[in-house]
Length: 219
Image (cartoon, rainbow, N blue to C red; front, side):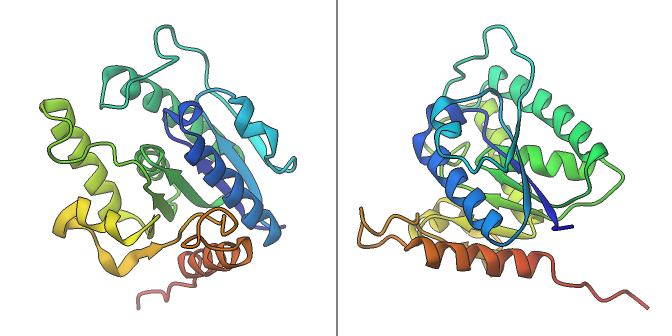
């Protein structure tokens, strides 16, 4: 049986076409490698399901009043959504033996919480395209807490994916650069700096091979 992957979308995935396309491309690459894929989202987005591989299973959370359109900044609404996604992810992990968790944007924080909230320890990949809190952009205690949680998530991730080299500077010296991979979007027909899908798929495969490499047992 192929190793299963749980992809955890962000709390704002329905409002982020770039993330939706990235999840679709990642699912396609993983399915090409023969991996089973589950996708956890706050709610169904028509753009996400439009071209998503039909073999991928999509899971949602119950609709929570006043949280349908959370703001870009760190907020109580996003925290509520992330908390419910955490409990949903723990329930999914109890029923399926995932090999890897793959979180997008603040979904990476949920992936780390699932890892820490279950008996089984999961390697997880943190893929950040829109940082939850950028210094100088959002201020206040919520932003400070969000940035602390995001940096902690990145420090403990088995691998980190960023879309371009300029993203590295936004995280300062706390980013474990040895575990960072730069993977542009696989749309070379649109941008000359983009990957072809074959290049994108190969890059994803290398990261998963690294994350799933056998770890020598301590004597």
